[in-house]
Length: 314
Image 1 (cartoon, rainbow, N blue to C red):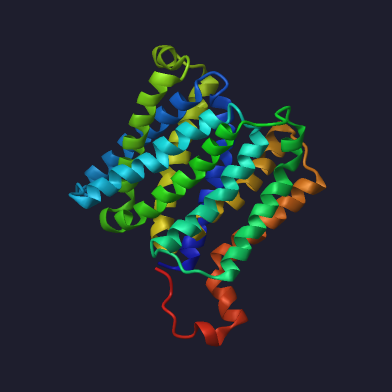
Image 2 (cartoon, helix red, strand yellow):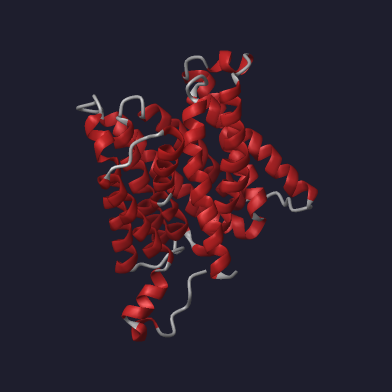
């Protein structure tokens, strides 16, 4: 698949997932967070599986592939969003954002290398480190302004685990996407993971049952629809395709672009302030994302003889 097409998909993913922050913020004002996430994933999963069935693209995994699918679904959805929402009760939002988004691409690279899906390079690690610095610069004001002077270790551990869990599941899912198609994998993982997340919400989240039995206000419905259509049907499907076509580390560099888009949109639509510090952080993250995406080209420019004859990444 052409690099131009993959780059277009990557930019669409960054835009869509950058805008989902606003939809989540609107939705959780009146709907319990885990209920919002679980119902969003379940609805998207059913629609995606319907598309796959209409095209005759459903081949039910057997044996080890089925086990792999179940584990990937739990890691990417249930064991990511459940701990993330719980942990953010005890951790300042800025701290949680820096921790979760910084760890996501790093964990994707680590799991990718460990499972033979990625190649090690100092160039790629340097780009990821630059992105982490950019995230820290962008979110430092929000973090320091928080009243949470000593967030609990359990909350921090839960947020960190959310990033690790999502990355682990993403790398596990890459082979399945190649074998069963992005629509089936996107639909099955979101439906399975969302269903288990909803069950967990009903057991531990206050107000979950009543939220399912009452009519939501139009703002919550609008936010939920945006998350289903753009965040999941479009964004999640593209993410699965990028996992297959460019690898976990480069696909995961969306974590350096989407926050910049979210900040820019917040400034345009909600008159949120943009400072020189936030602009500096966004520039660093965008440069880092470019470094992750074009790692091989950078290596070729820096040391063409060393990479001559190497097999290009899948």
